[in-house]
Amino acid sequence: KDYMTIDVLAYFNPDTNAGDRGVPPPIISIVDMLSRERREACNKIAWGLVDLGYLMEDTVERMQKDYGNQILGKAEIARMLTSPRHACSGKVLGSTEEAWDLMRREFRTLVRQTIDPTDLCNIVRKEGGLTSIAHPGRILGPKGKRLSRGDLTLLIERVKPDAIECYYPYNRMVADINREESATIRIMMIALAESNGLLVTGGSDFHGTKCSRGVSSPGDISLPSQYTRRFLEALHYKI
Image (cartoon, rainbow, N blue to C red; front, side, top):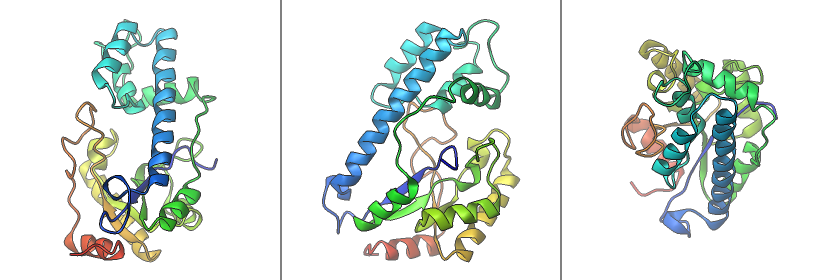
């Protein structure tokens, strides 16, 4: 209830955990629930934008068919709103920021089932895994502003993750962040992790081949060996 969205990454050692690819069944159930809720919410947003005259009906139908089992997420919907090929005539927005503002304004009452991040971290830990807060540098507070270092410290104290994602392609994923600013955020996040005794992780935010994001494949972002080793050791992974 304190923040708009907090994404939590969960990691498991396939050598020490039962389940599909080493992921315990309770975690798979949670992921299935969250994926189902996200798919339904995004569908409501897409068709709601059709009703509001922003997106063309045939475009939404075609995109949903093209995505298949992959979720047509809000990031993709935002890009559709800025494309003359997808948005209705006279309703093409000038930036993805405008698109996000529109979705927040028009669908602020849309409720979907989620799970408290603190509870999720506790469940993952109980099942023998590790957790990391994803892309903390782009978490938005209640007023739509990115969290300050102080806010992030409070968030860490509440959620109690094992790590935070410090290596992340902000300059490719967030329109108003350039390469230099992305590097500055990375340095700040590493300092934040170290000052709170947390591990350092990295990720590309790859969401599948159909997703029009700034990365082309999993593992697009590398993690320095010292952080990789510490994380794998904490996960009891044989190096």
